[in-house]
Image (cartoon, rainbow, N blue to C red; front, side, top):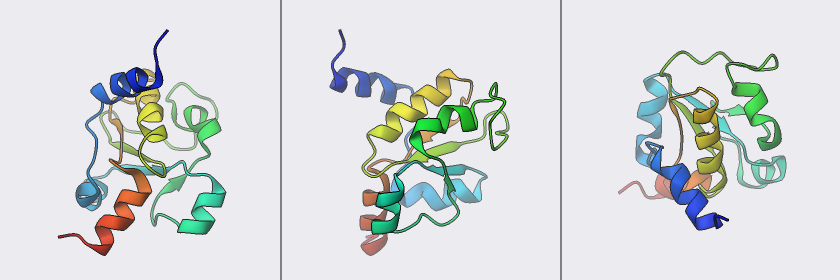
Length: 123
């Protein structure tokens, strides 16, 4: 049996994680940002402008190239940056998206909380 730390480490090994300071550049280069935070967190902490909001429980079905219920077409090699609250759940989700054929899937280091902190003090 694998423990959660090992699972997270394995998931992150395949990701080219994005630092909060680099998120805007990634968006300008064509990345799709996917916010998987629950509605309660988005209402409490705010939205992520420009992000595609997808509930975590349907993420794979809404993005997988093989899914009949996908809501966006992702070009080969296009970056898909998954954002959760602290950057744990998003790592596991991004690794799963890679397994489903989205080679450019990754996540935001530290999640939404790290982005908010960086925006307050980018130095």
